[in-house]
Amino acid sequence: MKITKLFLLCFALGISVTSCDEDEKVEAEFVERDRQEVYDENIAEIEAFLESHTFNYAEFQNNPMYSDLTTTPPTVTPNDSYSIEFTELSDTSTDLAIIDFLDSATYPKLELHTVTQDDIEYKLYILKVREGLGESVHRLDKAAVLYKGTVPNGTVFDSAVTVNTSFNLTTAGDELGVIRGFREGLVRFKTSQGFTDNDSGETVYHNHGIGAVFIPSGLGYFSSELTNIPSYSPVFFRFSVITRSDTDYDSDGVPSHLEDLDGDGNGFNDDTDGDGLPNFVDNDDDGDGVITIYEDIDEDGDPTNDDTNGNGIPNYLDATVSLSNQSS
Ligand SMILES: [Ca+2]
Ligand SMILES: [Ca+2]
Ligand SMILES: [Ca+2]
Ligand SMILES: [Ca+2]
Image (cartoon, rainbow, N blue to C red):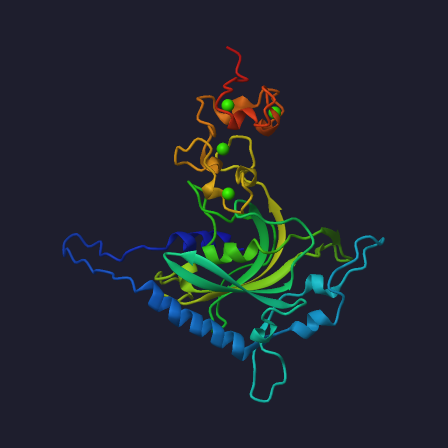
């Protein structure tokens, strides 16, 4: 498990290179490359990869897509235990290339999404072998994911092969998340629907999302030179999305994904009191001076179900109600 490394990589973005040698006072100025120029190169490299490589689609297609969990014991598809493998196409190969799955009517399908960042419209290719049947994943969640991160030549720079650790998807405050491109890929899949233990006592997850995302460096590590990732290199993640769990970045008793009030998947554009702090990192969401967790009047641990004046707006979002559960 190399989760920690992934977090470090995420934070290594934008570090400038300077000498620490006080005596010599040498300072090597680091000039970052133009983001559009790098993106143009990256997307050409990604699309060339998608055209020149295939993956083990037949292996998946030879089986039922999903396990049937309504039978006892469940009727388990081998697909639950498969992961995506890329292979370079030879001149004589009749296999389909990854790009041939673009906008396919059925799974596997290659989706093309647009992610805007730094005034650049990034193309983000996402390969969905299957979407999954469990819970949706929000950008503010924690997730347990099996994954392999590689550069285009196949070198693995990071991986998680067990699901013992889950990680935040979004970086906020002291909580470190993953790179944007990985996050944007993961949230388009669903978690496993359940698990069973096989004869060897190993846990087998069923009906989880299985996919891959092809990330331009501007949505990844960009100029950072990291172990097994050259500066400005695209990175690819292949993954199985196993479970999600709530976060509570501001410890106010409201799960972070529920602080995305308009439900658009973006927690950063919800700021009830307009104080510049998005609700998911604001412990007094309505700015009435009574912190959200104290506006949980019935003290059931859930501030969202307390609406003293019955106007449909819970007290913690209603600045006209400033009752506190702290007896004076
Ligand atoms: Ca929102
Ligand atoms: Ca809050
Ligand atoms: Ca309550
Ligand atoms: Ca209030």
